[in-house]
Length: 458
Image 1 (cartoon, helix red, strand yellow):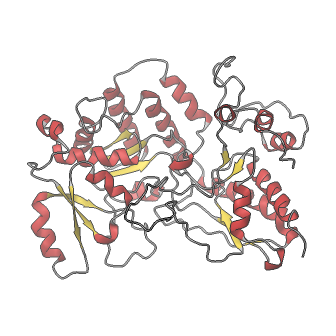
Image 2 (spheres, rainbow, N blue to C red):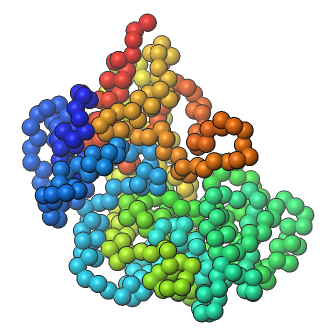
Image 3 (cartoon, rainbow, N blue to C red):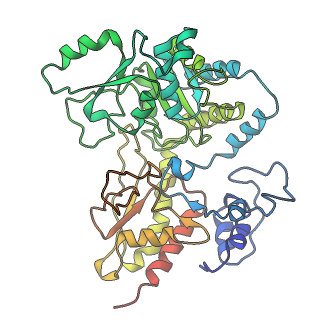
């Protein structure tokens, strides 16, 4: 591969701003200087209108803005834009833009569609939100305000509300409980191991909302005494399809639309700034009353457009109805392309890591072992992938929690970047392949060959 091209010529060869127009053979042809055959259909959607002047006129929007696009081996992280939407989703977004509509009417209709698609229990419906974090805000706000106008105007001043506390286990505190605190609700920590837990919980119950728990697999060290079922799910998660269809539902259950995972290991690939709140019809109505398009509401900032609502519905429909066994087979085939390319360097594939019974981040992960004599570590190989230009392969800086601020109480010179957990074995590297587009497995394989071949011989 020749990585000496400039960014514009490279992405021009790929043919679209997202780099997904070619089939595998065409991608390979573009990289190796051959004239690609015309593509019958775009992978990431067809252009609606050619842009001849100004922003986007080159067909390489990221180059115009000076931003490096990446091949996604990190997963559906918000900090890298989630996922790439399917053409069908893009088409529904276009169709949604054809007319104006009453957003509340569309939300109600969308909620019924979601409930039917996910086979929710009778009396349950859905709400399309501006992400799972937004779902937590309007969901908890709705449970406190109900449909009372004075409360909806007063929140987050909930001092006079009959219920304004949320019980949470100490071990379940996590970054997204900030969205609960955002409503003015007070988190009351309890320790299930304490002898007074039941007594204190019973005492608090008249003043509390449903217990808040992150997904039960949030920590691998979950203890038997911890809550066995979540009331809410963390953002960027999607419970297994079997969980959604067979188990009971909590009072509120927000999901992010770009998320991973199901037991069958696939993402929804909906609009990045969208999510789903599932719950009892009355509670969903309260949540909608606290959300845009209503004004003077805590959720006015959680605006979701008609185009986003329709795009998410199509993405969810495709997700639920897909052949998950066939999808998993595609992932294995992508990983095998990489394995076959680098085995000549002594790099061996490790067993696939995949727990289909987990509720969060359960997509398959593929790893490889580098022989010590090769002279490069796994993190070094990953860094070289990330440093690839003009199109990066993953990002070593894509921490799930995003940018961090300065802590004035910390020692001088402290690095405020997110601390990444060191690998268990310095001579292994791995990543997810489920967000790769057609042909990108070959790009990664060829780049790894280049990396390993460039290592100075001892």
